[in-house]
Length: 145
Image (cartoon, rainbow, N blue to C red; front, side, top):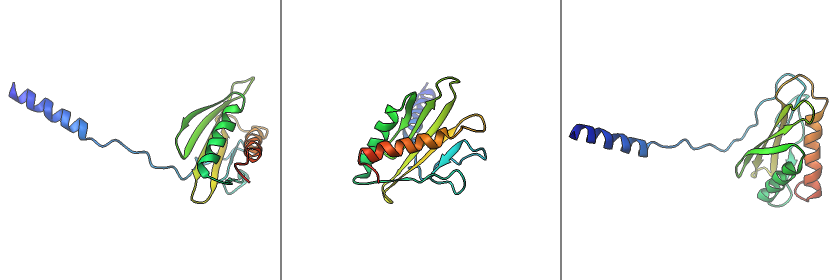
């Protein structure tokens, strides 16, 4: 009996003292595939799209981005922290899902952004238009240049 008790207490102590993995602040967006259905402000090819240059407080600009994304039709923010977010945009007819990622780089005064189709080859420019629509909304809100 004392051995079982000792084992149980030891197991509880090990469980409680096990460090939880802290998520490091993301600094890079997922890479774009070779297909033309992705744009990223961290790409160096045909996939490149300019990052959002922040005016004012970085956290206000990031909040404005979250608001603008939530106002896009069929778009849901699935994960968000103080410096990163992931959203899913679903097409109307075929229900294809595109991933939208953003990283707040307060130090450089930029929001890095990526939008990519999960399936298929061409997106007929949908992802680029989505990011440019976000840019326009943020400019109108006075959050970015």
